[in-house]
Amino acid sequence: MLLIALGSAGGDNKDQGAGMKDGTSTPTVSDKAKAPKVPNLEVIEHSTESDSFTTYIVGKVKNNTDKQYTYVQVELNLYDAEGSQVGSTIDNTNNLEPGGTWKFKAAALEEFTSYKIKDITGY
Image 1 (cartoon, rainbow, N blue to C red):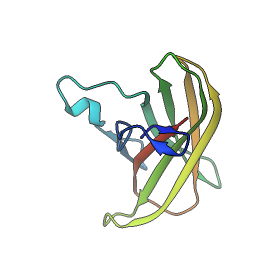
Image 2: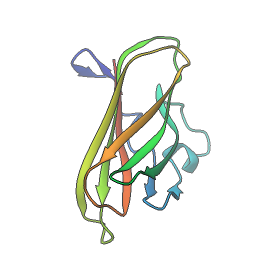
Image 3: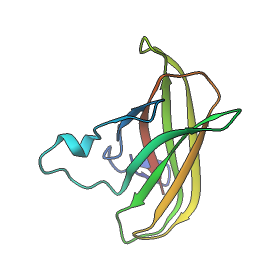
Image 4: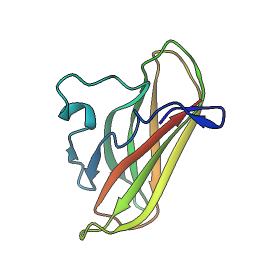
């Protein structure tokens, strides 16, 4: 969903993929459609990585427009083995340039088995 000031400009950035804590991922929305409309902000890859204390969901967001985004945020939901939501996490950046990519790294403080990219917002 692209935010313009305090309003919404459409829902083309919703549910752009999911993955498992073991690093496998499921197809993104654009993988499932034959001729998808390219969203303004798009997750082009995602996975998990861990250090000795925390698991992170990492990936790249691409700005598919010719405008700079002052602020961009990716929101993720976390799920247990039964599919119940156990938490959520976010990461954000400033000044994503036209055609640019941003490497996000969102810390997951809860134990989880899978995750879903719920939204990417920007203005």
